Structure formats: structure tokens, C-alpha cells
Length: 329
Ligand SMILES: NC(=O)c1ccc[n+]([C@@H]2O[C@H](COP(=O)([O-])OP(=O)(O)OC[C@H]3O[C@@H](n4cnc5c(N)ncnc54)[C@H](OP(=O)(O)O)[C@@H]3O)[C@@H](O)[C@H]2O)c1
Image 1 (cartoon, helix red, strand yellow):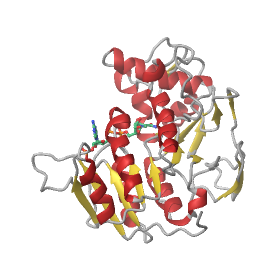
Image 2 (cartoon, helix red, strand yellow; image 1 turned 120 degrees about the vertical axis):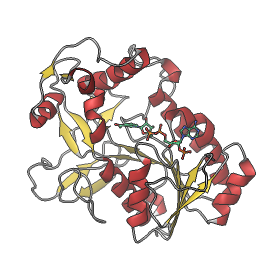
Image 3 (cartoon, helix red, strand yellow; image 1 turned 180 degrees about the vertical axis):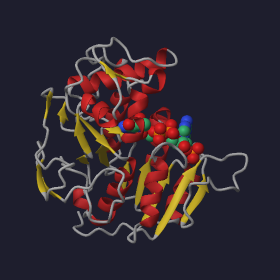
């Protein structure tokens, strides 16, 4: 496998979700990206670009059910990397169809939707301590998709991020009762990452790391490692601990919020979490808020990766800047 990164042509699946604008923006600003297309389902006003699309990103309308058209798009643009930002509902539908077409068109790396808690090892586990919904659990599905990518021999990377900053108040039900509602004591550290940093990180590694390091690799990002109480304190907001469920607008809403916040309580909300050992690896490195120098990450599963001087979240993320720590496996 090549030791040089030659990725210059990128395709993002999904134009206007919660994470896609950050991924598209970061790629559009990166000097290593020479071609950027954004695949989007046809819409009535397909001629108009979504407002968030940068000038150098080309919107391409696609019908994910049209296999040959998808192959043609990836072939026409000599796409090296496909990044899926599709909704969870599309994982084994549109995303799978795009992966099959990408494989046929010779795409080098596929990035499926992950961008949350660690999913390695969940496939086949079924119901997880009553937390999820068995094989329909989104996190289980995400892990099953990795098996699918292996089966079609399409190299992939997984990026685990923990909770995104803009989702914190929603997940803890602050929008409902203006409090952080906490399952348990709120004293377990979890990982939180800014959406800007996810986009910047992706653009950086996908244009610089050799293919050998981008093949079936897991990246564990952590912009901040904090307990929920620390977050509430930092924001100067009240919290209530040991709630049974997070308030929400309906059963699926509060159940989902409760699942994610339960994971923050049990340790699963850390991107160092290992589902096999049921243990967290907090990872070394400086406190991101201390602003002190470099750290080192030693991945549980292997390769050691230097981390760079951390920046506060939400600050512009330069080409060579990483989040607090990242590990590969
Ligand atoms: N860690 C966190 O805090 C956090 C928070 C939220 C989400 N997430 C995760 O991030 C990932 C992306 O979530 P998101 O909220 O950004 O996605 P989203 O807004 O639900 O959807 C993203 C895009 O997917 C396309 N899409 C939607 N439904 C589709 C379908 N049925 N078939 C094909 N395409 C479809 C749409 O693009 P077009 O209209 O352009 O086709 C849409 O803009 C998910 O895996 C989610 O679990 C993580």
C-alpha cells in the first residue's frame, strides 16, 4: 500500500445536515483539496445551491438508487475519498449503495458516518444492557457497516468524536427545562468535540496521511474531556443529578437523549472506551484548557501518535492542528 498521500478529489455525501457544512467548509478551505463535489438527493429547486455551500464545492444531484449514475459520478471526478455525512436512516440504504459504487469506481478511502461514540465491537452484541434497541441500535448498525466495507474490500476510516459541542444542551434536556439533566452523579468524564475540529481533522488526515494509515483505521478524537457537572459549571447553568430519564418531546426523543446521556454516565461517552474490556482509556496529554505544549497518545490497539499543542474549541483549526489527542487502531 502506498506511503504517499495522493488524495486530491473528494466527494461528500449529504449537503445540509448537522455535520456536513463543517466537513464541506474544511475541505473547501484546504489547499490539498483540488476537487470537491457534494452529492445531494434531487430536490424540486435542484438548480439552487444550499446556502452553506462554498463557491469551490460543486453540488451534484444523485439518485442513490441509480447505481450506474453513481459510479459515473465518482469515475468522472476521479474521486479519491468519499465522506458520508448521511443521516442514520441512510446507513444501510443510500450509504451502502454509495459504497458499492465507490468500490467499483476505484475510490481509495470511504469514511462512513460515525462521528459519535465508539462503536468498535458492537456488531452482533445485540441488546446492550437494555440501553439500545438491539441490532436496530444506530451504534450497532454503524459497526455492522464496517463489516460490510471489509466484505467489499473498500478501505475505510472511522472517526469517533464523542458529543459535538452544539448538541450538548439538547442532549441533556436543557432546552426543555433550562437545566442539565444528569443520569447518575455526572462525575464520569466524557469526550466532547467541536464540529469545526471534526471537519478540520478530516481534511487534514485525508490529505496528508499515507493510504496505509488510512486503511481500516479508527481515530478517536477528543476536543475536551469533561464531566457533565464540569460542563454545567463552566456554562454557569443549573443541573439536577440522578434523573431517571432526560426530558424530551416524545418517546423516541427522550429515549435517545437518555441513551446518550447514560453513556456519558457509564464511561461509554469517552472516545477511549473499549467495548470488549468495558473500560475507558482516558489517554494521556495535557489539559486542553491549560494551553500547555505537546502530549503523546498511545493507542490501546497500537500506533503511537504525537498530538500537537491544543487549542480551545471553536477556534479556527489550522492545517497542522489536532484536537487534544487522537489515537489510531
Ligand atoms: N456526536 C454527536 O453529538 C452527534 C450529533 C448529531 C449527529 N451525530 C451523527 O452524525 C451523523 C450525521 O448526522 P446529521 O444529523 O448531520 O445528519 P442529517 O442531518 O440527519 O442528514 C444529513 C444529510 O443526509 C442526507 N439524507 C437524509 N436522509 C437521507 C436518506 N434517507 N437517504 C439519503 N440521504 C439522506 C441529506 O442530504 P441531502 O438532502 O443533501 O441528500 C441530509 O442533509 C449521524 O451518524 C449522527 O448519528 C452525532
